[in-house]
Length: 404
Image 1 (spheres, one colour):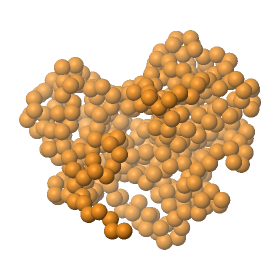
Image 2 (cartoon, one colour):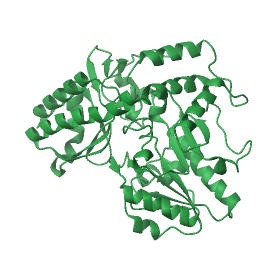
Image 3 (cartoon, helix red, strand yellow):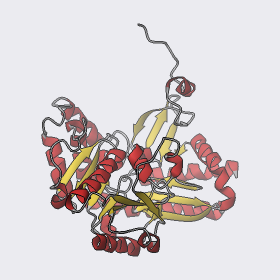
Image 4 (tube, one colour):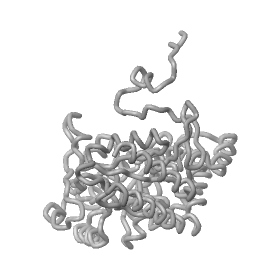
């Protein structure tokens, strides 16, 4: 059967793709560093980073070389076997973190799904079957599987799909008393983003995280840090929890871990992992040698003094440029976040104009994201050049001039 011919344009999206996205009017076809080009050859400066994914920009030469070399050796063999890239990557993640065991998957949702299942399974085996309650936080986001989207604290993503998994409760972010009101002996885990990403780039306070650790210790509950968006150098350290000086029991990673190649990981301790046995959980593609080879190189490049210290330097340049823009337009109420996960909070009168602001920025050749209500999100490459930052901010300035 001959496939139907169709002109590949933005208009063809609605004829081909399930209508769960609303993509921009242009289609990117090429990227290099922090710049991308569309079908018409127009150039854009990318502050979105593929939603905090392309941590080393587009088409990084070392990642390209690694991909080429591994593709000539071994793409996929399934979890019937192990493979050298997976073992090397696991060893590095363990060496650089609190953990002693790793599980590989393909997305942040899968890593979190594994974390929640592990927490319940561990608690039911070590304590009792009723110890299965998970505490999460309002405005949190942990993925799109039915379990993870139910644990997430935004009902707009989980409503109308039928009965939700039981035993999930939500507390107020950065409010320890709201946690104390619902935690009890049947709580198996507390899961938290150290910076709420989709919730508006809202950082947890150090005191709040330390008190959560104490509560988990008191009630024999596991503390799960979702670092899908903040892990692997995004905040100037390999893991954000290092800034808080609090260790979790389980940690989840994705996004920047693969620099654009799909991979995720769940990290935990030997003690917690010891209750698992063959067949309890799994994934077809997890630990894929192609993904793991690339991810290993991503960590090798990022986990250096030059790149990690450079995150803070780039942040200062961005903040300086944003302050110039705000002095002219008086648009921002607050700039928050950490490292290169930045939330620009718009003043109330501009919140409804956020789509117009982003579209005007696209027209000027600069790409931003949104996060929550009235927040512009920046999550660029960790090695973004100063010249790209300044030129991107100039384009942002011109966009605002035209619409404001």
